[in-house]
Length: 270
Ligand code: PAF
Image (cartoon, rainbow, N blue to C red; front, side):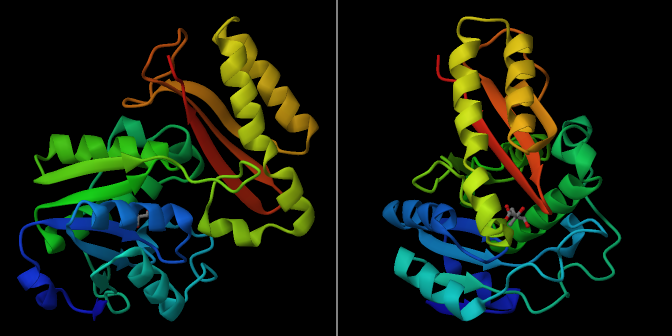
């Protein structure tokens, strides 16, 4: 594994690049993306950058877990060739130009985290520009992020081939996330209910109106102590509400459990 800190050293990567942008704190979800790229025989580049542009003022930018040595070991084992770790803040400090993702970024995560998706899109655009034409891998756990990046690549004609891979879960169903380490052991026991209730809700929606299933699921989450920020059925590409299920529908949710916010989703199989 070659560790690269400045983009000048990225120039001689060659053409067949697989790129996995991350904020570090790697878990099985990230590793599945790295393994997929490596299995496609691409020069596999993983970036680690905790992007200040995508954190709100009250969020966890400062305490976000950082452990480069551990991440480097995991990335190497999963088959990464290059770890791109831009030094500190030269990537974002003093920039004047940013990406605004439009209305797809205003709802759901965008409503609860104003500016978040503009920050994500801006850094992902910058990283794409530094890496060059490539195949880029993202986890479906952040479904709205996937939709936004898909729209950005299409709208701005970026020479990037996108791959979105399934959410990796703990055995009890909890979606893997770098932020799961913030859960207390009591909260960790409650957290898998989110996936369970989304799964039950998806089953119910095959036979009952979407709206009443969502209401029922929201009540069940609440009764378990999960405060619902949103729970909705949307088109997975546009994030417009779905009142009738289609093969493009997804159930999306964000809940708060103590100080931790969990997000998850389920793609509806039809
Ligand atoms: O999903 C993430 O970890 C981040 O949003 C990303 C894509 C690396 C941009 O900072």
